[in-house]
Length: 74
Image (cartoon, rainbow, N blue to C red; front, side, top):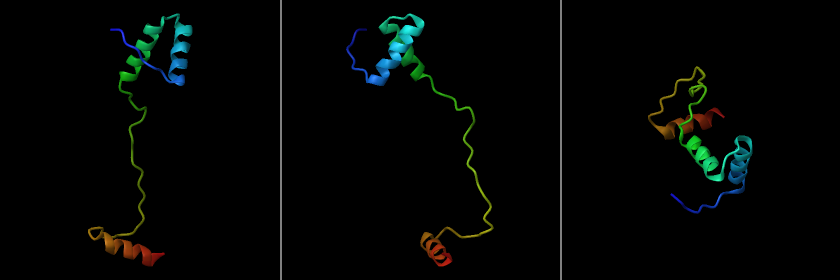
C-alpha cells in the first residue's frame, strides 16, 4: 500500500539511524519500527504497590468524618 505520511523529527531520525545501521530502504525501516511498536511490552518486573502499616485504624465508610479526623490530628 502506498500512502504519504509526515514523520516528526525524532521519528525521522530513528528511521534514518535504522536505515544506516542495517542498510535498509526507507519503507523497510519504517515497517520495522512500526512493527516493533505494535508488540506489547512486558515490564521487567510486575507492578507491586508498596504499603506501610501505620498502626492507625480509621473507618473510611464516611469520608467526611475521616477528613475531620485527619484535620484534628494536624
